[in-house]
Image 1 (cartoon, helix red, strand yellow):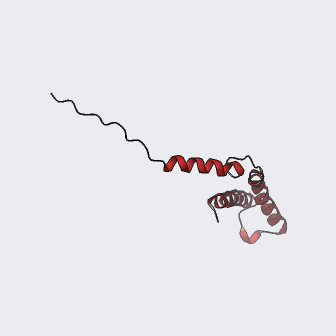
Image 2: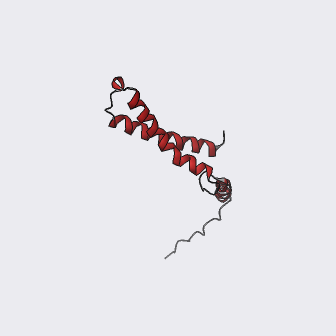
Image 3: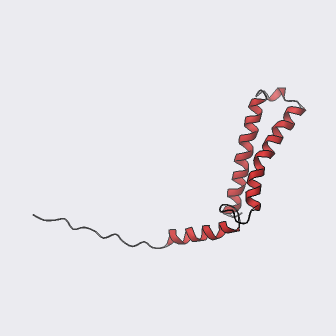
Length: 95
């Protein structure tokens, strides 16, 4: 699995977990008191949270997950791996 896919799945997971946790706490936060309707509402909140991330992945021009992301990542890696020029060192003045 490449880094782009891992980042996308991590984003899905964070969004889903945040929405489900929030909905669970709003529903009362009691795991044993969950009924079918509460479970459906919590699951719907999680799915709703993942939709914006899925839309980003579907957009080919998205800088994080779209087709442009590969070019941006390659450019950044190239710049990071290029050897840097040494900074000029100053000589201490003698008295």
